[in-house]
Length: 484
Image 1: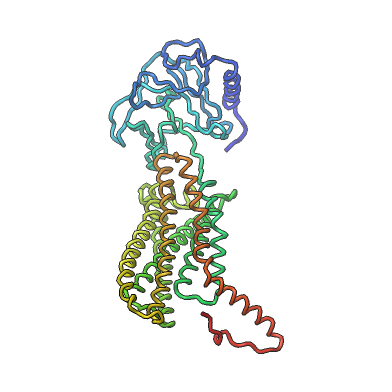
Image 2: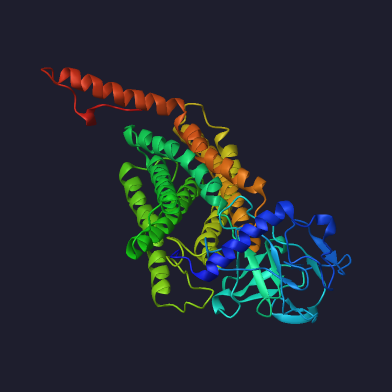
């Protein structure tokens, strides 16, 4: 919280201003000897250069300032470092400085040679990096033998260029702020997809012929749309939600995402049953309605039970456990890291795996049925139903492929951000593009079809004629109109 600046804060601000002046009028980079441990002729310096001092070709941990200098730090004015500079430590007596190096949590050795250079991250941001507090259990860190920084409480690894160590307070670590690129890259793709998902749902809601496959597709699309809307709202909102509202948003995001995957699973199961002969190629209207009711219980009941399990674990579970969801702690969703792995990506990966297996089994069955129907006449109803089901299978195969590609890139970007807190820009561009194209892809393969447009036209024309004839001419009942 920013309040009235105290004298220490004013002094630091003055030092920052002096550093800015020094940056332009002070020591030149050529005059700096960053590897020197002896007395220097300058009291302050700033440079973006990184110099190896005795490391050779091996892994070299970055030290913010050269020996005998330290990085001034205070919570004013923005809660983080705004300008990188180093200041002479007048109490420095030439003592040796070393840091413990770990292999995960096992101490390996102590390093006393470093790369000297201040952090250059987030140069155009108001908050560039901050000082970690190793005495706080929530901020306990260990420097790894591969040069990365291990953040124990969140099981995160930061790349070597994301932090530097310093001699202040024994040993200090300065860590770059992670700029949440998902707010622009990932969510913008979802925003582009949303109107196309809505249009797909509305078209299938309007058309009169609603068989089981179309109903399942409607529920799949609306679940995905609602998950996108809630996720975008919670991430881009400028206002803080009350705790109860925040938790509800998080649970509903999980429910709708899992629901969308289960409705895709319903399509795969029903398609497999179709070609396996468990329900035949046709089926009466009453049996289809019963089957759809069972599918609804499955696609709604499983996410509801899963959310109840997560709720109980989040409310009564051990908060220090890696299995704790930590929903609503830092954002209106699952905490990054293990919570998202266990309660989002693992269930979705399981369902995608099930769908792939069902599609493989269905494809094998199609080849067998194809041989059986090859001898049937063109007018045979079995062959007609088979061809229709096969076309439906091809559509779902495209949808499953698109879903697999979409969530594969999502998992890659999530895993990279989780483990290294740094993601190559091309991954975000790819994820953004696929998220944007996903809703468009669904719209075109399921709406831009001749039969769908004919059904839509028929419904709109029937409504128009119904309005025209309602003034005095009786019109046939809806059930008397045969729609094919």
